[in-house]
Image (cartoon, rainbow, N blue to C red; front, side):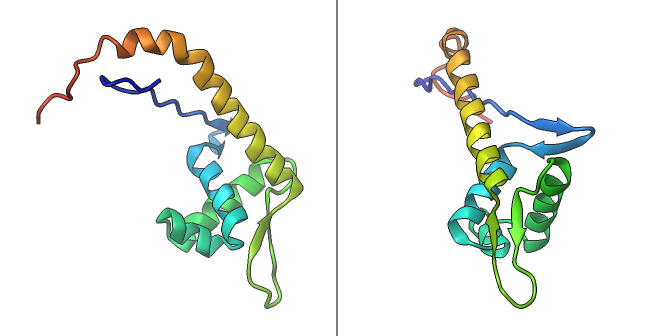
Length: 121
């Protein structure tokens, strides 16, 4: 959808009450935990502090019916996605892809109306 004039950026958020249960940042964190095997390494990869990453995991685990991330207490380092976490991440990515595809035709008309260069400061 990105033309020379601009691009569309969609931001899908799942809300549980006033909390953001899942959005782009939390989905990226889930993917990073799956890739790196720990909350701290995932946070570092995304430029997040351990505290911020841990709070995001805590929010997700509290908002969903089943935990999305499992940590290994008792001296074992690391964390992993639960089966539910993997399923939620895949479903969220599919939702975003569907939204982007559905928005494509309408977005093209808007993107074509943008100036070819961004306005100067």
